[in-house]
Length: 107
Image (cartoon, rainbow, N blue to C red; front, side, top):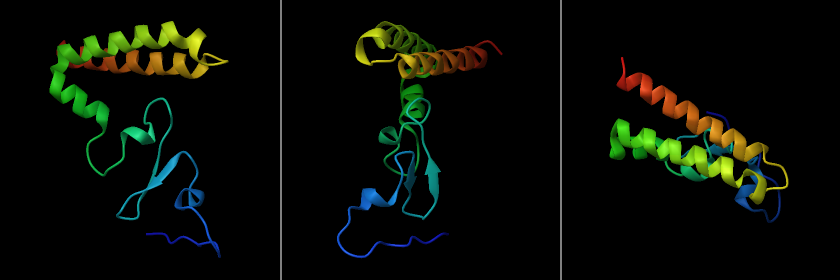
């Protein structure tokens, strides 16, 4: 377990970490990215939101969910951001998850 060097004076806890990492209650550092593992979907130790969705929807439902998100991110890529790169990466990630799940279904 690593320790943190705390700044002197007043500070916000968020100032101690970069945007792509979270320190869990056990002291482990976990790296996140906005496309395949966003921190806001991993707020507690344990199951990730995408895994929970897959479990609840079942394999076929999860493929449909992923395909819907591919359409959503492709559509909004040119409208939401100045550059569509992140939305297109998200569409690609959902397509990868759909393909991985289809491989599970058709073993």
